[in-house]
Image 1 (cartoon, rainbow, N blue to C red):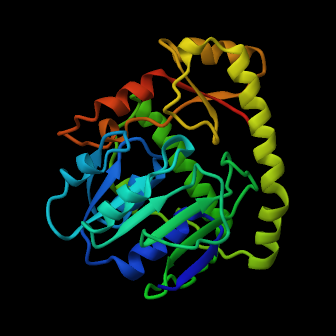
Image 2: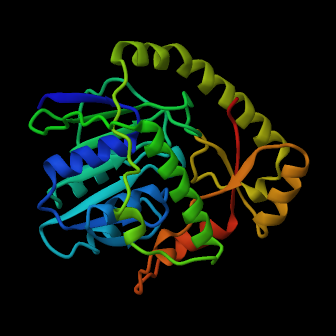
Length: 295
């Protein structure tokens, strides 16, 4: 089956265009609890019913959450560690639409064999290759992902930043989630990029960035007590450690002008999911610190 490549300003924009143009009839979606807030915000914007599944590379546990034959599935490569092809095939056989979000993995510019209906990579802020913007999507030739450029990208970006601040207020309990907040404004950018120029930039800078990350990861591995390390977690995006009091550690790192962050929250807890049982996601939210390993 032939594969189309889509280049956009943001992976979120490619995802929204794909969902609107190809998946309107799919009302129920399974999303990972450990995910960037913008993903469930997007599905809420499109009035989709969301069920969150727990952290882990367990295809069968995801399949157990499927309610009917019209349930879509979105996967993420947690911490840049990839899914096995056998699991991808198993999941694809059980859903009308499989979206594979590899935005925390190193971007690729060509795909020999595409299992998912949509495969996404990002070179936006904070990604493995940070170009400040840009995303690459792959879909099958039978799908349409037509361009829909916005008229006021600066306003769109401002709205996104306001939603980012809104999410942080939710996390600390200053406010609660209201779906109208993400439905009543335009905050997803669909701008296009010059494809040859963009792909040239990716090819030119990617390997140097990966080499730099490898050097820093090797340094971290030598200096940090192995009790804080978990080899089951990929470290290409950032170098991840497990600690009992991440906020204490983060505060000390900031005092030294070093760069680190806690990881994605268990989104189900904060998005009014009354049946949340995603305990692994909550554990990781409370214990992982991402040590930056980029420029």
